[in-house]
Length: 430
Ligand code: ACO
Image 1: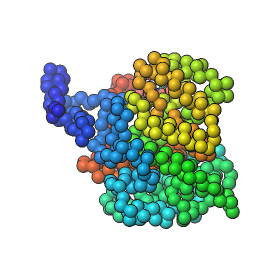
Image 2: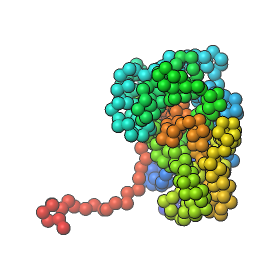
Image 3: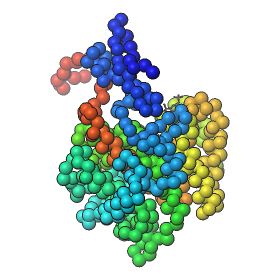
Image 4: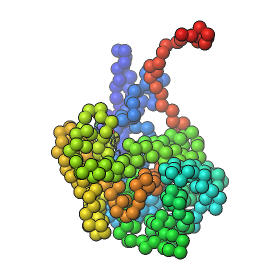
């Protein structure tokens, strides 16, 4: 493989170094391009730009491969629990039994919110989207849990901050739901595991404990594992960029949550359900919906289809599709929305439009159906994504801060506005 690339501009040749990753990825290092040539690279939406070297997550979008710290996501979904996978991401390797017990105890210890944090929830109108509440309250946590030292510079502070975030985000998420339906907050229980405790805080009532279904708990574990990291996506890049300004870790994660709330990122699972519902309400007419989504430049898209990186079936969609069938067979029989989803997928995959553009179902296409089956309301879907993605965000924040040189992120631009124009006083302006 080449170690150098040559670039010719205005008849002059420049040598650029090439960097190689462990799985055969290669990138042309343009970090000194401007100082050497006065040119910059132009890559809107960063589709061809590597912003960092990272050892956390590997994706091969053409082959449908996703690995965390080298381990295939299929193996993790099959054998691991969310908190074990989170540990793998946060601390770089699978935990021993003692390490997992330490982590688990830390999550239990930190699950409750400072009592004053409750007041934040009452400040929001009850119609506020739970993602808005989540990002605001996470940002506010920095006031309640200021870190004694910078977590990027002290391992013990990093560990404790990671644990606090992981433990409290789940509680904030459940509280935001309780607030939206006007029910009292339910405190976390010490005897429940991570996902079971979340279901308890979501669905229990005072003096009436929710009966936690083991399949629902397993489904949540799988969904969180599948969402735990996805390298330099929009929200993770946001966390890294905000953190690169030395913003505190809570503010950086809150920014990531805001990015994730967008309907073409983490809000897509909610969009998928709304699309399936819309088709269902209109008598299940898949063809007319598909035709509209296939009009070039149409504002209507087939939600849950397409991905910037995957140009084949999203490996996460494969896992969740299988699980989706299993859970619905076991608990609910056949859901009409699942039937529509299956038909829609089958029809879309046969369409020239989708084939030509390599558009396949992504993880959001099925995750909403699983969430619905276990009783999670639609507006909480992006929040579920955020809980799952949290260990990835924290890990990337740390990795970015430890990178050398850890410079502030600052893209450039090609200016296309007016040339120099003189100021015109208002009384003579036309
Ligand atoms: N339905 C219909 N057409 C689509 C879709 C879709 N879901 N996705 C892409 N296309 C078309 C585009 O119109 C474009 O067509 P053109 O070449 O004729 O102009 C072509 O496919 C390429 O699309 P881009 O928007 O350039 O692809 P990009 O990589 O920028 O976007 C994205 C990826 C945002 C995910 C897009 O596919 C999309 O909007 N999908 C629907 C929303 C969704 O499911 N988002 C979840 C993403 S996964 C995640 O965040 C977990």
